[in-house]
Length: 140
Image 1 (cartoon, rainbow, N blue to C red):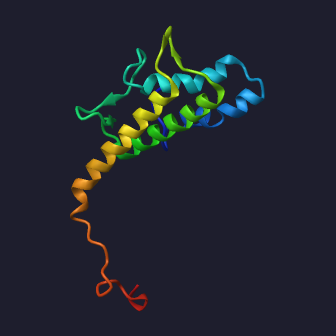
Image 2 (spheres, rainbow, N blue to C red):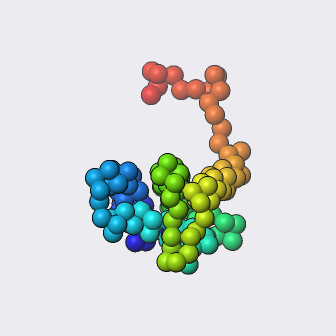
């Protein structure tokens, strides 16, 4: 599984979001492992990582919508970390444990912080409507 989640590739999201239901249904280890495979492709310290990080640490996709990429993967990391915490589980990438669920949340938070910092630098050019400049309903 690739470290992808977006319009073109929804598999990671499907497996992460239905993970608790798979457990309740007594699903096979192969299906359960798909959510963990996703984590293995994203975490920086994973031997199976296949996503790129910019020099500043932001998840990066060549030719893609990088903010969407970073945001969606961070969301899935945070959701899966919560599920792992409830179940007292860790993710194994091959024979290596890639940190407790708190590490997954840490990576997700770092992406949010990097995204906010990136957006903050362009925020000065965004001007909110002031009461005197807001469009009137008759002009919309």
